[in-house]
Amino acid sequence: MEGVRTLPGAEEVDFPEPVGTQTCYYTIHSEPYTIPVAFKDKGIRECTFKLALPKLFEQKLRFLCDLGAASTEAIKVKGASVVPRDVILELVEASLGRPGARPPFSPTTTRCCASMCAARRTTRRSTGA
Image (tube, rainbow, N blue to C red; front, side, top):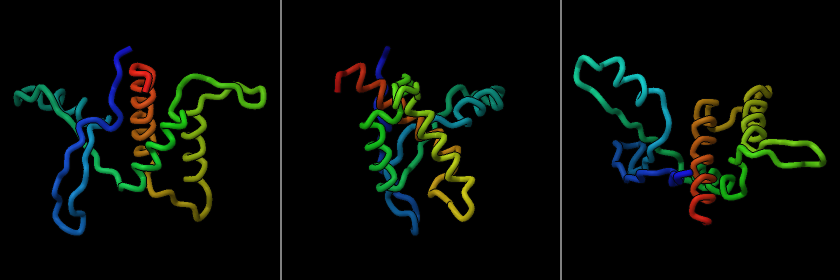
């Protein structure tokens, strides 16, 4: 399997204040798939999407990925078979439903980040890193 770098395409982008300079990365999103189809008659054949994550969130995401929390391969936990990525997604979804709880990201961002974690897991397996 070909490896995919974690948070690929890092690029510093200067946004107007109050945002300022952010590091943007390629990530999955619906637009790269729908825009070329919707505007095919305009000659658009390709579309990319980059996302900037808050630095602290990015560090936490990388930490979870390094632990293996993005794995889609089942592991045994106290005799039960669980998929780490599914556990993370369930925990986030559950936290969204708690009264008064509001994580600093949406379910869409969570799934996006899980996909980026999955890319990291693929890279580690392919490169032995």
